[in-house]
Figure 1 (cartoon, helix red, strand yellow):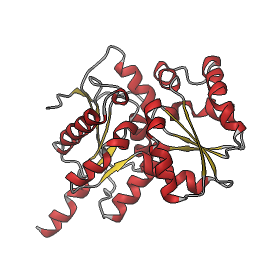
Figure 2 (tube, helix red, strand yellow):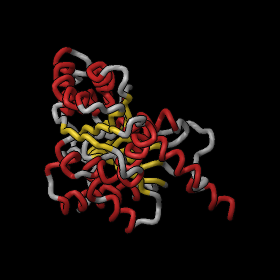
Figure 3 (cartoon, one colour):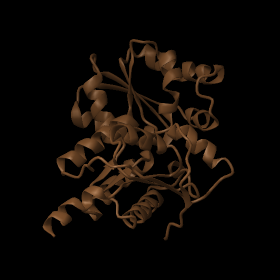
Amino acid sequence: MAGMQRTLPRNRPIGVFDSGLGGLTVVKALKRVLPYEDIVYLGDTARLPYGTKSAEAIQRFALQDTEFLLGRNVKLVIVACHSASSVALDELQKRHKLPILGVIDPGARAAVETTRNNRIGVIGTGLTIGSGSYERAIRRYRRDVEIVARSTPLFVPLAEEGWLNNDVAYRAALAYLKPLRAERIDTLLLGCTHYPLLKRVIARALGHRIRLVDSAEETALSARALLADKSLLRRKARPRYRFYLSDLSPSFREICSRFLGEPVNDVIRATIPD
């Protein structure tokens, strides 16, 4: 019996939530880094975007999203939403005993480890940049670093529209990133889960000397390290992926497939209790 109790948590799924579909880039990274893990994804598409809501509303939504995932017996919750990671992560971690991981700290740590000249650029949505959450996280690891943060909101609709590497995307990237290049950054942190889809055009606009840090990829790596540390890594097995959305738009399958990089089949409409 004791052996069964030790192995049961290991076989439970990883839970991931976001206000919409951008968090599927985290799922994509998790599938690559943790290929044997079951994953349950919740996209709160009925209430997106979280970034325009008050901090109190975002905290309430994040608590409800976490409770939904706990009802699916997850062993780890990943807050794949920068707005919720900014204002709700501490409260979630206080309320729950199981591991809860946000997307900000893993990217901040990796950016500090990557930079050579201590000049880091950060791009994200207006709320993420305005909150200063990445600056605070980066300075927890290195206080003397220079940080240049810029809001790049047009990258979100470009990613959702599938305009990932065309002339429109390139011109937007040049306009947004030219000031960062002028600040002589050597590392750029992608501070939004939509932005990994635009890696190619961002790298093209920046030039080869500036290295990119993908917060989705770094979050997946942090999840693997956390599960390994707690002896919760699942042994070799065929994984199952379940996707819950609180609202199903006419184009949700197309957008889901774009973010995940493959067709999405097991999609269930979710009711998130207040």
